Amino acid sequence: MQKNPANVIVMISGSGSNLQSIINKADDIGVNIQSVISNKADAYGLKRAKDAGITTQVIEHTKFSSREDFDRALIKYINKFNPDLIILAGFMRILSDGFVATFAGKILNIHPSLLPKYKGLNTHQRALDADDTKAGASVHFVTNELDSGEIILQESVTIDAHDNATTLAKKVLEQEHILYPKAIKKVLQR
Ligand code: GAR
Image (tube, rainbow, N blue to C red; front, side):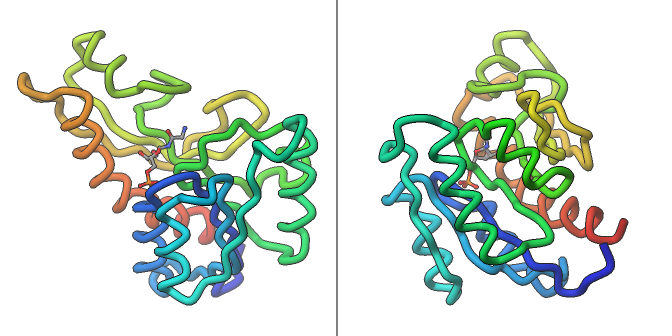
């Protein structure tokens, strides 16, 4: 993908600190964020987007009777933009096969574990419970199997004896903010 800047949509559900790191490094990565979508109306990331002058859209999954209907509304909105990439940044909904097929090969996600370890939720506690010495984050392509698509980049951190799920999450998140912009850039340079 040689286009510079590449057009991207970012999807969030919460704080949006990864979104912020992408906003801050947009020029270096070579992206133009066309819109930020949240499935939660109170996501703090919406404020971050607005402060950066980016269009926002709330599409609440609770307003739809099925995952497929929610995803159809997402697709309808995203199709207006014809983005090069869709960047999931703390978007906490599983996407349907229909959504993944519509944007095949264009959806990226960041997951707070060293995949293939700890797909799904509570990744940090699971790493601690397993007495792992390292934790980390992975950026991967989204396929219709949860947290299983091709890994683009990973970064690890050392788990210290005093770490708990909160301190570990904070350490990993700091690395995520460096990792995600790098991984997006890597995909765009392919
Ligand atoms: C990040 O740690 C991200 O890896 C994780 O949610 C957090 C979002 O933080 N994503 C997942 O767990 C996806 N399954 P942010 O809203 O501050 O970017």
